[in-house]
Image (cartoon, rainbow, N blue to C red; front, side, top):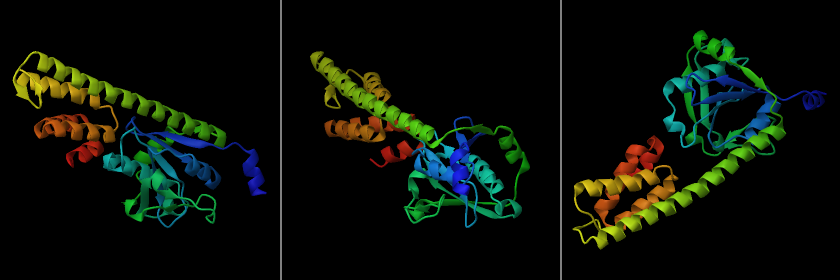
Length: 266
């Protein structure tokens, strides 16, 4: 009977305005809605749940390119407060542990109950202890609560649109990387043509021009995917280690923490 009632009434996703507008907070209405959110989540989603208690599945949608390490502590606390509030047992007690991990780390198998999940890698699950409810935070969030009728088909369409945008962006980045390579080749050709002093395996006139060349390349590479940036830095390093190092250092200054960490390892 409950399953029939669930089938005929509209599914809803509850959206909340985060204190930082670059993030979006949302959660399912019940365990059946949670099941659809698990199925159609995004790689940019961070999942929250009260540990060892039933609770709502709260999600924080991150900006593209951000990871769990980039999220400020106060934003994690804000989502954890909302998660605690939406736990029948957790909302009544203090010192509640809320676990969180990226959506891609959620594991769902056929023998699990509706709305139940596990983890692919337990080491990638983090936790935060909420000592008590902070009314200022939860009241503000509830005032922004917006119910949207996102049926499973709509959630699937939203995910498909997101994947299409990512594919188009990847194609653009590959095209941009090719453009960067062409520009570098043109710089090298012009330098050789002008018969200037050789630095970094190509002809440039002075330090100012070397800096212009490095900045030009880094500027074109900064929006490419990190693996393309790493590949380019390695290629430039084969021409001259100092050349590659300067391109890498310039890129690190232009990237977020996650990308900068990967580039720093080169």
